[in-house]
Image (cartoon, rainbow, N blue to C red):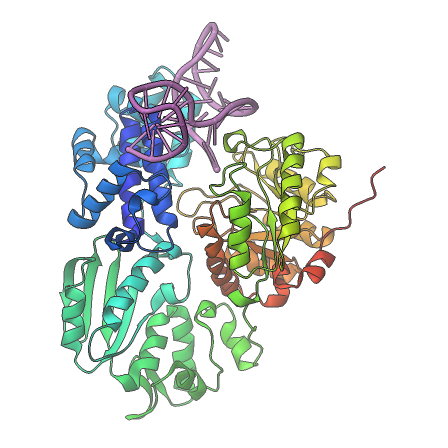
Length: 576
DNA sequence: GCCGTTTTCGGCCCGACTGTTTTCAGTCG
């Protein structure tokens, strides 16, 4: 069992306990454990097996939870989870997905109206039965109906970062099969889309049967849905469907190209081939019956007179035209990034100390970072007022003076308040090296107000970047209603950067907005928003997203050396 | 359920806003 699945089990227990109004601290313990496991850079199973490390040494994992991890690893399930599931209807947990509904109100809806699914919630709301309950009113009912539209009832999709854990593990398993030459994930996973619905697995080997046997025997497989001569479909226990194709070596490049897609991209390629009297399929490029290419993707593209097109660009959004003109962007690489300018410490809602974060960032090879703990409005995160922030900055300076080879900027994640003002006065902000301004509250305000708030922040001479500019949570929350074009235009005019937040659930801005930002000449800054040392590794997912938008190093502020990065910062007016 | 001790159990981040009420419970990250 992989880490995301372990974490999901604990999250489910936490949800169900909360619905039962269990001790809130017990609930929190399960949530903390889930987060710890999700953030682990190594599989928990490895630690459980290891003689040198103990699960109990992990943050928030004690004797009991360590035992439960062992049980999950051993049996694939948890007696406590089964007990809880037995006491509560299975759909009740779905109600928590509705923004504005928490455990208390979900429980009331269940007890008073027997609501135990999103469907019955919708019916009750639409027939105005909810407003009759004490503590609920017409407004709440309307909100529920509105929010229900944003709850994804689609087939389950996985964040790319989560899918990667399963994909990597499966690839390791298959590559160790005797006779396997190559194994690769194709499809939307290879194109690095922000979420993945299923995995397209491509393998070349001597005997197809042995790979299929090996896949069928994989511990993560729940069931085999189909199996033929070269094609097999399984469902993993976690719920992801995996489609395996076994192809001969000489077709590998063609198959990789074909199964990577996108469909729209491939249709254009095939039409181009047709015009040249060629035919492209998953086995190769053919002139008549003769295969003229197929071993590598480069060959396939070359037969059409095209350079290799990186998978992230294959969305039929103009990349083929650029390739024809040899004007493809030189896409950003992870190694291009020299800094990370959004991270938290345990002074607010981060989990690691200032020193631990700084040292971890240094180990990652960063040349500069900014510590950006929350400002005071974010009370739940223990946000900082002027006095505490200045004290924090003092500690940062003291620590920074001892760190060689990496610059630590004194920063803050500044809240943009509901009325559009900023959460800290100018004289405080003027002392900051770096200010990233974000919206956390009043997310449901109408479009004009949200837009005005962002514009206010962008125009402030003290704000250097806007954090997670749309506030979306992939698959959970749509993001604020905002006139993004106006915001981007202002950002370009005022020299305010836009963040690409690398959290797998955010990836905000998204690829489409990033393209718009690039075209407007807005500087992008790619940050992790790390709340732990492990999360500093998330930068990779921001880079994938940037690549999907065709960003080059020159579009990304933190790919510059510090001195050049600083030149991009707004000039602050001299204080009176 | 974890943690850090006063080594056996008490404390566990906390405050503003919303939509209900007519003083406050529930939700938010």
